[in-house]
Length: 109
Image (cartoon, rainbow, N blue to C red; front, top):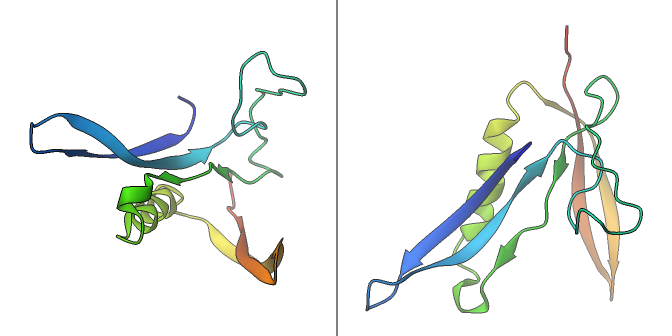
């Protein structure tokens, strides 16, 4: 994988392991989807002008509100050492909700 993908596993009473949360970051232009999907661009981002992208996070409904997505985001942020926040943007999600997004940059060379 070209970026980092984090998985949180747990075991049930019978010791079977299963994934309860996952997510990560990517340095490719297209974040997710089939390799053969329409408008797929698997080329690498240019670190001189393109930021790495956070992949979607998924948490099993039985495991929400336990800090798993926060742990995955923290791991992504730690992997992005050397980056600095340039600005904070508010992205409307609909129904009166919004998501604060940080635009990050990293000096290279």
